[in-house]
Image 1 (cartoon, rainbow, N blue to C red):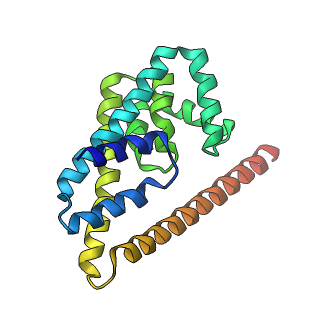
Image 2: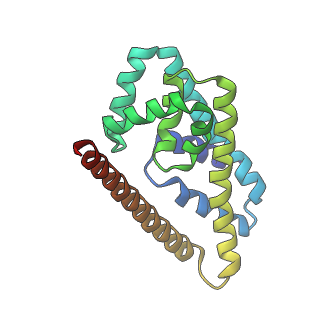
Length: 197
């Protein structure tokens, strides 16, 4: 159980592997009765929330100016631009309740979301509730996917199945990101044409 908790916690601070890859592997291991699926979801969610809570409280304690500098420095390491972070902060302020939950379902953004929530001094109850629900949904989906994938393809080795699912998810994420980027550019160009007319 401590290992599951540590994986959930580390996912917040060490974004080396996509978290969904680790969560799928946890689901695959549940088939061999290393742990049950509900326990895996609860413990990894607890670990991930603990990490997010620590970031939220740290940013609140640091104050506005230091927090902003820390946010921009850390997001450069994740490959996010300052402009994107600025938009994320503005969106959080405008739609705090919804975005706290939704941000936990978007790769990379989910790692920055507790920092942004602390930065804008989001209501603690909204932050805690939305974050727990979002993390539970995220973790539950991928742990269940790993678990059911083994049941659907029982003859395949766990490592082969995990690698195939990870590749599929990374390709899907890349295609979604590319589609989103193209849609944003098209909207931006249409807006520029409209403003010229």
